[in-house]
Length: 545
Image 1 (cartoon, one colour):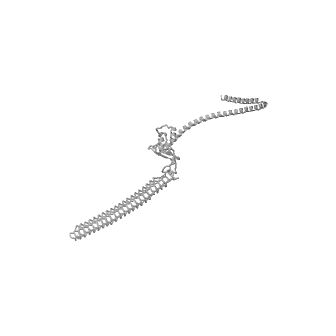
Image 2 (spheres, one colour):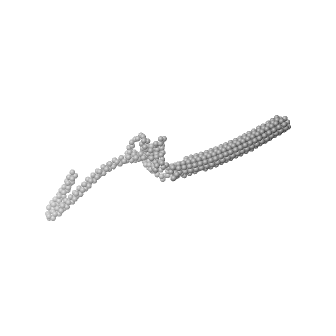
Image 3 (cartoon, helix red, strand yellow):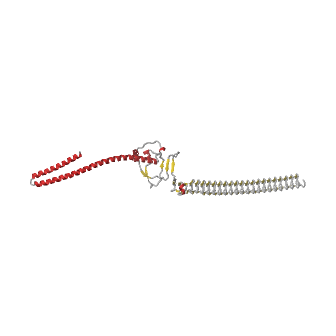
């Protein structure tokens, strides 16, 4: 061709026009205005290309410059390769300035770090060693071994950081990762954001699965997704939800909204407006609070477990004391159900309590609505093996049963009870499961049977008393009759005695001076009196007959 110059030793120009092969053993295959100015430099063709590096190669294209030793430009427009053994596959306005740097294609890409790689895209920058941008636009891998797979305006500035894609993501933590999404920031070492928008993982080993405006700043903190979530403590977790705060180490919130786990090991399963403290657990529900250490609220609404190891469930249950258990029904909206002291068990069920002790739910006890005592199930249809009971025998055994006052060892000595010992009760009647308990149904049965036996005895004694009273009434009537007879006899005797006295006085006047007659009259008076008494006795005898 015309105006070609092969000035180098053993230089070769295959054709074209205005080409200059000034390097020893350099080669220009053809084209226009190409230059091979270094040893073993090669320009295959194209227009205005330059291979100035030792063993540099330009395959073709326009206005390309391969200035680094062993540099390669396959083609394209306005490509510059200055790095040793760097390469650009094509595109426009791309540059590979680092040794062994590579740009596959695209436009306006710059790989200036050693072993830097840009697969393609536009306006991507890799300025540190072994960093990579796969493609996209405006992406930067500016730390050693950083990687951006694609997307737009992403920046991997941490060593070994990775951004898969997305838009305006930044991975500044060492070995941090962002899978994609938009405007996410992974600033903690080994932190991870899978996707979403405006998420920030600043804690070392922190993880955010996705969502919107979430922040994981604690070491190994985790957010699964959701929105407006903040996990600031070590190994704390929020699976998802909205407006969640986890500030206690090893604390967890499963989801929901406006939930807060603020102390070590706190757990909230879900729900709304719940707050859990140290090692406390809230299963769900709304407006529940578990501030006591290792306290529990399984769910419900407006429950509070403030005592350590306390439990509050239902609605409006307030377990305020250590170890207290409170269960409240729906009336808690109006009047809370409150614990009664340390380790107390308080429950409210306006619809009644029913406790079953068998699989078929037929045997047990009930506390009916408004009742103040337990009612054991006593339906005849639930019973079998009936045997008659001798109430008098039960009464006799009961009379021999030792009864005393006592207190349980767990109580204060001032608290007194009265009753038998379970061993004595079991020995006397053989009732119940064992000799360590006295079931109320058996105690009641013994009492009722003894009452029946006592009633039978009382009935017999009442009959005997009635007979004795009747006999006594008859005797009383007889006594009264005899008293009346005696009174009549006394009156008659008094009359006779008065008459005899009168006769004696008259006789005494008539025969005074005659001693023999007086003696005779005195004997006669005694005889008359004796006759009168005999007459009365005979009269009484006839009356009796």
